[in-house]
Image (cartoon, rainbow, N blue to C red):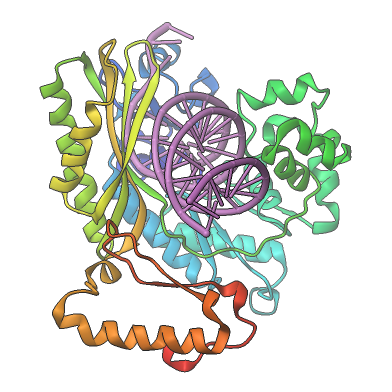
Length: 399
DNA sequence: TCTGGGGTCCTGATGCTT
DNA sequence: TCTGAAGCATCAGGACCC
């Protein structure tokens, strides 16, 4: 979607159409989330401090964000995409990859597919404009989609992808930001074409995992299929405060708010439990510090997350006031296996069934095929099977 | 000029387990 | 029973994306 939040505001309030709109917080520390295309010629863009944006574009209308509205429209759009492909991989509220393999028979050639998708977005949202890029890899499609924003449409055939990327600056590589671009330039790489021509082993030695990824992006390789929706790896809540804080009681207040919010979201997600929590603080001199801990047992209530956060708070050095207080949960497990108390008398039958299964596996595949997780700390202890030893299917009773 | 909030992924250090 | 190496998990910090 093009300037998504700003476009939504202009859609819902016709008086904003054709005028420069900035979506973002108005308090002293806010930044611009999205600038409408009317505001961009003034040099205003995402992540710019709001005070500076207003100085650059004094006529801009500042609108506070309405995330619930954006989420509603986003889900309408994602639903519409499901009519085009069974594999829709949302990247954020306003961007998604669709695996269109084999769709030409149904929707026509690539450009026709793109036009139909843009029409569908316009129809389900009541007039929002999207840009579509099509190609043989996700990265090339993404770059193609961004070239003619807003309201763009571009198809790059796979055989032309490398030439299409070659003249672009390395800052267009996915994952190359303000820290990495100077490193690339320092070793003589200014264009994506130069990255594609470089020796992949040298790139890997020079830039690690990043180098390997850049090599494959630049060569338009890695045509991975869309993955579909993905399960989150972490869930957080953080807040930049209007005034810096150093009073522990006040910090705890913010941690409590975050803990409750995360707990609620975790439970909404169908009873996910977190095994890890991390407290993040940002000092007034803009230094980020964090401490994390493992939750035993895993939890999804605000009270449990808060309790862990308070304990973590003691592990900071607290040398200066904080401008941001945040909390995140990670390392998720689903609720059901956690609730299976293997040593609960009511579960004894289950336990015995597992024991006999374990014996059956041992008998068939040898002693080393099975090990028991004996860690008394972990409530979800059970039986682990070393798959390296299995050269035949497991007996059915083990499933 | 004065820096958000939601995330993912990578790296290097360290300690534990096998 | 001891020991070293390898592999893994955890932790803290940082870069990046939208």
